[in-house]
Length: 204
Image 1 (cartoon, rainbow, N blue to C red):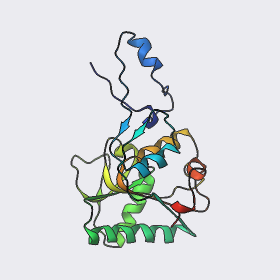
Image 2: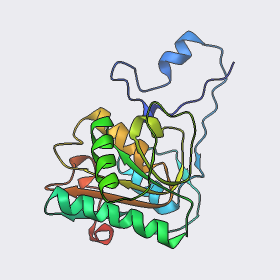
Image 3: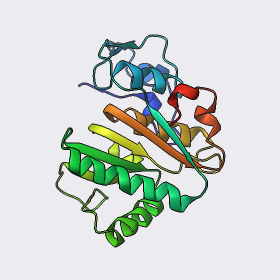
Image 4: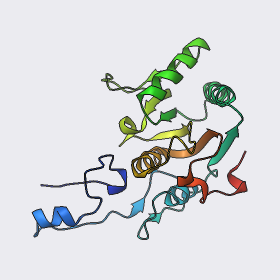
């Protein structure tokens, strides 16, 4: 029997986020730590380390763009930029997949309606889906677990929206889905979860 997992991706507030509980149940189990990170670029891995630090993590030296953080005066401007980036992705053809990863279904269906009104083709990856597609994908943090995308946009990363430990896990999951590009957008003050981990070089 084999168990695999990443405690930093736990979204259950009632579970203990370390291996000790499992080892008490299976005291003779062999423990193998998988510390190499292959999916994301070096820059994205280092950014995610600001959310959840793992001293044993080894980021593979595959370099790329710095994660980008964009601030907006209001949500309308923020949504307009997200749609603009989605259109640019469709026109560019550089990558196969762009995921817009929302915090929850409320945001997911809200953005879905905005895209429909702008006649932008998206693939809505919700709990009812049985297939997966490339292109512009709209999903939430929970459903994105285990998946990977060339480019990721995480919207609405405001102080009032991402604020507790579960939100931290959601943000970590969303960031680490990105292989090549990561964009985070917000209005008002950015979430304190990542505020101290960013610098002006991330701002656009």
